[in-house]
Length: 231
Image 1 (cartoon, helix red, strand yellow):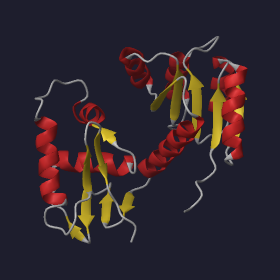
Image 2 (cartoon, rainbow, N blue to C red; image 1 turned 120 degrees about the vertical axis):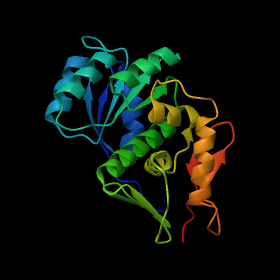
Image 3 (tube, rainbow, N blue to C red; image 1 turned 90 degrees about the vertical axis):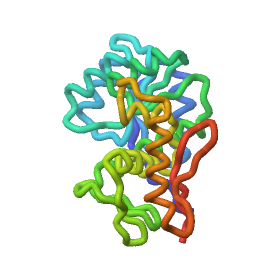
Image 4 (cartoon, rainbow, N blue to C red; image 1 turned 90 degrees about the horizontal axis):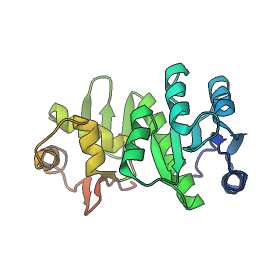
């Protein structure tokens, strides 16, 4: 199994014990850390140094996590993946974070192993989004031409089917929840409850039905993922 690439990470956290725990674990895994203990210092570092990822606490002195995220998205010349740490588990707090540009959330207390997995997945998704072509086993997506092929055969996808497939490919190997898909596809517009189910069915008809085995997998009670077996 290939060792994950080392990440250059900025950790913005005012609780020293939490910062030490995170850095101690992640540095053992080969990742490289810079630190800031308040929002203003964190924003200055984020704008002037190059990081693969930023981990920031929601409740920061000087400039809180939401304000920092807003300022960073307005001032930075590139998209830097952001993982927000919070003791708040309400959906309103999470939506507020996503609204200002947070890429992912982790609620305290959390396992350090899960934190690393989330960081690697965020970084990988960001890199995939910068590439014009995504290749996953027999599946190839050309983002410039907005076409997908399986085993070299172009798939006759409609616009919504392509969007769903792209979201799943960029998130692979993570599971994408129904709510995440709906948010990406329709944002806050009201939709019929069966709309997503209908689009998933149509995608399966094109992506899987003509081939020997399915790629699109339902994880019951959670969402959907692409199951790509190693050759």
